[in-house]
Length: 75
Image 1 (cartoon, rainbow, N blue to C red):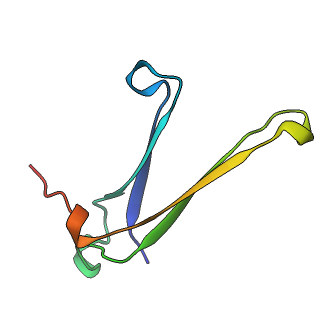
Image 2: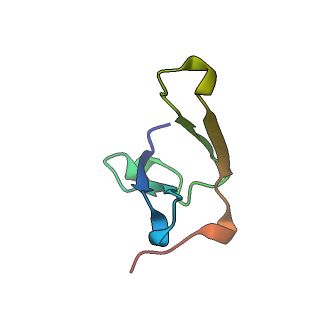
């Protein structure tokens, strides 16, 4: 649809053995013709394990849908 987006990955988030993965919409050259806020849009993030042993490979997926309850205005 022309929306710009970014993905942030923070390994060892808050000194734990977990990683934080975040998705966010970005301002871009198509802003004038796009609907803002971009409500009811869905994104699926999938993390794939690339272990050389195919029997040990894993993946994890998370789905996010934008909502008016999660709009953060610029500062």
